[in-house]
Length: 466
Image (cartoon, rainbow, N blue to C red; front, side, top):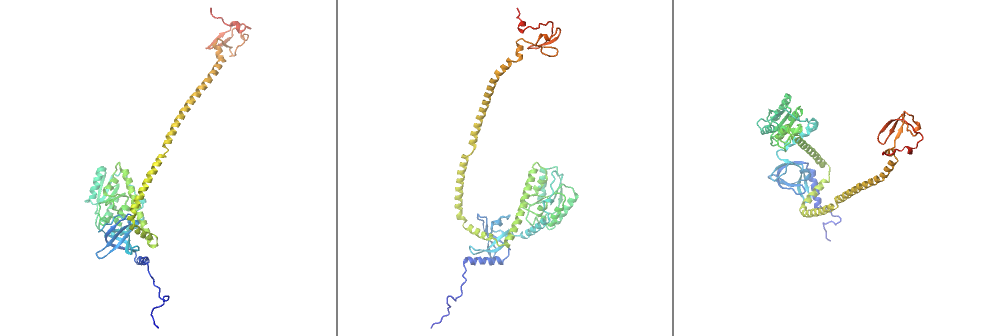
């Protein structure tokens, strides 16, 4: 009898066979659960931006590299576009793209390397002062409409003062200008700027202050991001316009100041009276609204990112599907263009039909009919008036025939005594009475000299002259 070491099939241990999808899914869960949100610095290469709006690139150092993905809802908040060869500082979570089994980083925030620490300090101070209410509109003072004296707090040798003086001379040469010299760069600049703001405000020489400096890097502009300067601006009783850096530069002083100008020259334009002053002020309010809205949206996006890290959300699956959609995006391009062409043709056809069904022609026809009916109404009224006038003439003649005035026209008279009583009988009068005879035209005052009672009118009809 032969012996064997093999176990029967029903007693052999079962093998736990992984599928590729299961292996990648569990590997991804291990990576994401093991590593927290990290900061990483490296050089950008192989940067790609497909039509979906997502970014794909590689971060590398001299010894290694790693694939990165930054989805649209995150990269749209950045103020710069990464380019190959640029060094950046990124905040990302470690993950794995299951579709290709590739290790990758999902980037949520990025900024140029070297400014990262200062940028974090900037955001921390910004949140602190905002919580204390230093940025509230209730603390903002309106700028004077017609200032007499403008104070400029800046370096007396920088380009900013030359630009400001040039604008003020051009727009309002009658304005008085007082320059308060301070250093605008370096570690010792912030305390001196704050002290000069306090001094200038205490002297009460100016109607408005311009706090100005030309453009530069974040390190160059840092004195205007110091807390001591922000609190000095907040405590100042005189309105302050912040004109620090270029249009894309934002400092803590911009948020605390009463008005933020994009450049030193623009700050001079804001405070100098001009016939375009109202338009400039409206543009400034629009810019400030955009800034505050952007800051609010940025805070909300940060809160959303924080919540998404704590709660398992189907958005991650959607992000993976978005990557797969990017893989087939090129094949869909021609189909999308063909569909758009057909839709444009259909739109043109429908527009043509709509123009043919326009009620404009019907309105023209109805206006013509209304004009004809108006003419017919006028003609009908004229005919009716003529008919009624013709019917009225016989009545007028009949009335005239029986009128006492017509009788008087034939030579008769109406005789009344002194009491205005009509005399119908000659016997009612006495010789010597005063009577009044009314004729067709006028009256006669008569005296009765002789009375012939009992005679008929026919007996006394006057005979014509011989």
